[in-house]
Image 1 (spheres, helix red, strand yellow):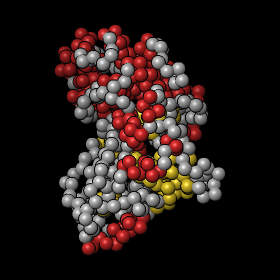
Image 2: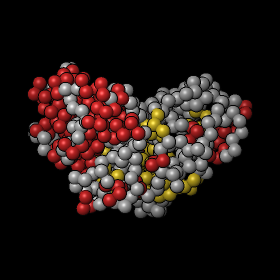
Image 3: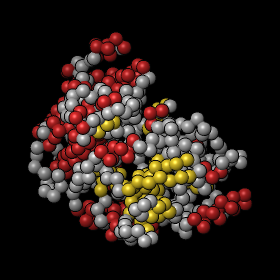
Image 4: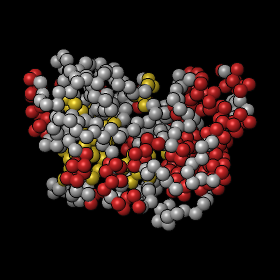
Length: 489
């Protein structure tokens, strides 16, 4: 079985086919069968102009494992923007899901209401439990993460099983899991609480203390993972979600009506497909419940935000005795698990991993210390609203940017780029950071900015062993200011 360790290449997901004209008045004569199926699948769908919410945000760069069995197909009306790659609907790939589908586990039956997002290895759907005689409470909203068939079904479940279920550890909880047999194989389905996207749900202007508290929660989540021997391995702002309290109190009609009819893009290959059941009848863009919540739930805008770290599928596991040990280079091997290559996006990737990727094309496993670098980059983006490394790609330019920001050079880096040494200095790093925070965050004093920069520079050392642990990060003076909300820790 293929899993994320067999990543073929790193690329930015781009829509290569131009957006094609959509006939929204009526389907063409040769797709009446498809249109009829869509109509019978759900009454929510109508092929006419609609209000579209394209709010899903992916990581700056996504690692895609391209199945050798997936053929590049051409389609009438082209392919839709802002949706998952249609060519991944093939044996080993995505499971075709349609609005109104129901899926059953031993605990509950789930009815799909809309799409929440997609990634390289899964699609995520808004669903609600259905009262069918099971003991689960009827009407609970959940997120169904339906993994590709080629994904490792055991790894992410094992990571969740390793973590104790404790209140407010700022890690997404696994509510249920089950297997789904489909035309493209057997898919693991993970059931989670519905979270809002940090980028789209967070108010545009947070007070300094609120920003600090948001960052504290993220560090607490990382510290919780590390204390139980789990390296996240793919930490970035796109994997931070905002909790949506009291979501179950909102009616299904209100949520469905708010977003309107989904924009349906019919899927019709130009040539007969050898396995048509592998393809969905249509694709729909994602919705962002955070938009709905900010407008429809007054208590949400007046309450302190609570965040959770998502997507543990790239996590590395260390044995409990090594959960906080200093030897982080071989944690996967220590667990008896084959080393899993890093899937960290270049914009938040630690320099030791990036150097190996650039010079040897080898993705080294993530470690506790590489998580700390990614954590620093994530905190900067949350506070400043932009990436620390813009348009990052695995190349010498990114390595040079990292070295300039740290003000130091690793000896083997000098051998790879000998001309770089003359441009790297502590004074130059000071100037780089001064430029990065030259436009102060609203409400911040010069002391606030200086303290925040000191925290990031401490976390972003070129030598991994010189970086602090997540627990040590929490003790930094920048986090020592009084919390404005006593009910959130």
